[in-house]
Image (cartoon, rainbow, N blue to C red; front, side, top):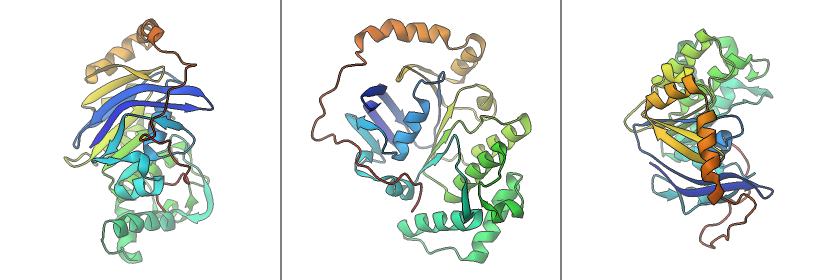
Length: 279
């Protein structure tokens, strides 16, 4: 489903991701772990199409299509969803209106009829209830006045309603107490499917106690330094990241952070596009 070969990114000449390689198949859950500043959120944002980054890759494809040729709104309609680490507040736009507009934009792109207000409200209420959200939260402005946990649950609600093919969750567990963590994890687990892939970006292992990944990848210094099973996450919980940071530093001599790569004309920079999930 997702194929990445030699992905490198930079901002203002400063390298962030360096030669990243990853394959994610339908039906799989992958966890991206790493210390602060390792490039985890950059990786998530690059997949969603944020235009801040200079992107070079031998291959960056989703379901056989070149992501570099797809602006963020098309990526969203094609089924790529990003749950933000810091969801923004949008005063004056009701949560319910935003959700329905997003869902119907995806349905239209897939050749499906729009959901009318009654049908959508019924479905939204059911999904919201499963996440401990009441009708009042659906009618409020998008994320306005929401607590951190409410914002994270609202992101999971968006995912459940949009039914993406590839869901990328950027630290959806940060700032959650144990009860909220379980609710969010249950919401993620209900989305596991043979035709859907999920990438969970997290700093800590605790979310992975509830959302068990098929593969765990450790990102340090913009590179995947090690991959393994759930046991790797447990090892990190016990040992921390220091031992892998030492390994990354030892291997880093072959990289020259200040060097500029020559960009092949067949591998264009991401073109500036509005950073939106769905238009």
